Length: 396
Image (cartoon, rainbow, N blue to C red; front, side, top):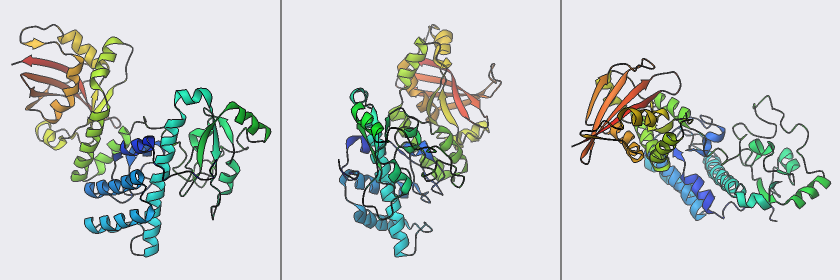
């Protein structure tokens, strides 16, 4: 067994994890924490869309091609010059630049490696034969962390709560990693006093607010939160960002969601299972400035939602209207976000009968049909949204 994690030996799960992130402009490194990093790529202080895109491409190159830290530093210098980026932490000194580039490079390499390993280690077929995980500390470090060293060789079942917070990496510059082992290895670990975490492993450090031995913001398992909703995090930021950044981020989020979420399958599922109450997040309102001119409602940062009850209501209320109208099918819900983002016509309607909220009606011609969508405005403090209320499809 090697005494170091092969971070430069890129594998598919590692690269997939990194490439499925969203670019998120931020001011500080702790603007988002924990599992939110599974869904967002950030570089503290990088708020320009093009700058963040190029920085991400440089990190992607380092992960995919294994070009190393020195090449990443060269790429970083070129990008700073190209975009005229100033005021970043570490700027102005050779040592500061070396430190900053190392942090960006190592953190992304290590977290993507760990997240890829999480996906591999949680493969159901592997768990059948190796349901235990072993913690490894990298040997030969100039400044090893005593607590991380004390966890070296620890073997626990993969469902043990220890892994929810202590799955590496556990701090800036952490090189620890995890491997899957058999029950026999677990029994041997018990005999050697390594079959349970040390006493006080989950104690909270009052200075950091997280478990002792873990740096602030690292008390999560990279990759385990890949399904974590980033809606509220992004929604809050859309309200505070300048308009240009908001629009760029909104487009990036919507492209990601439209490519990874299935409105058609969701509609089919909720129509078949009436116990489903969870909504589907279709994206964010992209043309909020245009909407405000007509509706006088500020929808900046609003989500576009497909409530579970909407397809059922639409099927019951409009499924058999006949005439020049056809019943909606699950595939039609793929177009809901497009109808709102690219509408041909928009009007305000009466308030909803259920919640008493304003309603917006939009029309959009798609092929030889006109889609008419009614959205309810939900302006609450949290989860602000335009929620689909009705869908009618007219034949031309």
